[in-house]
Length: 79
Length: 214
Image: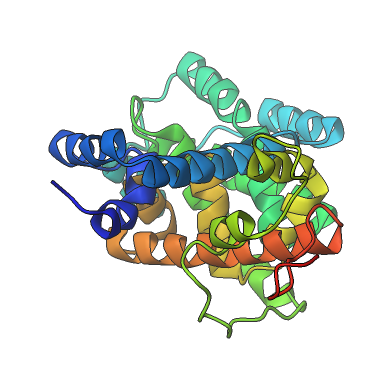
């Protein structure tokens, strides 16, 4: 069973879904038994979600979208 | 799969024929669907809305010109981001005059969490750390990202905002996956320190004095 340090070292890879199924199971096995690590993972998950959610509120200005659409109409075929 | 299409950006000999007008038009529409993501990323890279608009427009110009090189069925989004990254490096980076602080790398790994759990925040709340987070506005977060050095802004935006995998980021930035991981870790560490400082400055939290008194 992984200890706290080993589990916290995999925090971001776990949250980024970059671990193998076996590594995931090992992390989840530790989290199931360790409330402090679980709390830490949950916090970092919330930070990442918040950063994503807030930053994705920004959209391209309509004028830019219109210019790109126009450019696409005129894009010459390659020889 | 993604690698192949990305390699072709710089290879004008591949697939020059065979793109029908219909599939070109479809690819253009598919590419335009990524404009919000490209613009958000351009904004974090250039830190200027007018430069970001120019960068995105230039990216689409180059993408549409080399659309015949794109291998259909591969990763269009990563391909567009790679074109934008190359355009940025070649044309925009030299314009960036705002200095970034690249020292200060001796921050605790999980600064925000470690400090928040030690802070006294609204004791009546069941979940004080979450409440502090929720008070961070979009401007707080984008300003915090904009304080990071360029290479950190890049990976944080690609991973945490646009949700690219480590492999895709490696392809977009043309760096090894191991470098993506270490850079992303350091970027997140630094960002959490900045977010903590923002939370203090904005009065979302008050730092507890060493004697336990506020």
